[in-house]
Image 1 (cartoon, rainbow, N blue to C red):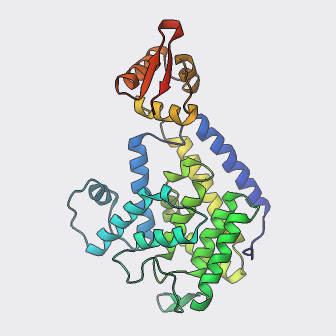
Image 2 (image 1 turned 90 degrees about the vertical axis):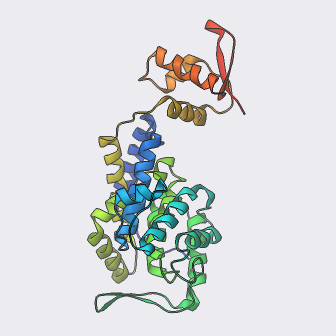
Image 3 (image 1 turned 30 degrees about the vertical axis):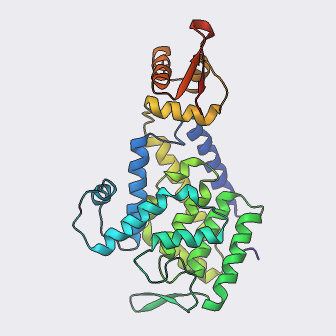
Length: 319
């Protein structure tokens, strides 16, 4: 059964804008940022997603944990961060269309934090803010069938992946499939789904923009509950994605080093042979001297093998 939502003019406009920005990201080689920027964005993602759930650790403290340094903080907060680092590092191991993978990811994310990590709930739950019940989740005996339907929708529905990722995020919050950790799973799994659309989403900290609009995020979840569909939430999340891409294009410098360029070129070129000119066509902003230096270093490091000489020189990635 397809989750309830409508495709509005705003959704169509945002999808078009996002698609255009993805094209710009690809052209500027921002879809796989430099190693340092990837690390920084991953930390921002983890810090923002956990802060939404009440985690107290700062960007600097999470960086220290990532670097295996000692941090003085509540043990629960430290464990949440360590689990999140592990699950985001293993993101490419999960199949976004698999309920089994979904539960496995939750098991890693919530290990040591709740007794039934990775297990679909069988009890009834409600979400309480202050003294008010803000959401009554579907009964425990319906959860597994609702999740199965949701994964069938994700795998087979003809709507665009961008839209389905937002719908899945909302439905995870609505179904509340686990006893705890549903918010961070909704955000994590949207990232897992979006990676199929573009690799930039593995490192784009969408969560940090959600954090800046946290009140609006919860309000739109509540409004969608009241309206019985996720249309408003889809619009909200597509705007978040669009703004994240705009921020990436406006504020991030490419600053690729030679290793970054070689790795990017390997992704693009595959296993065939190529020349320095082929390499330079991919990176139009570097000089011939820089291209020669990149290729020479890659040969010396055993990444490339070189054949021919001068004008007949060609290169091939070693297996």
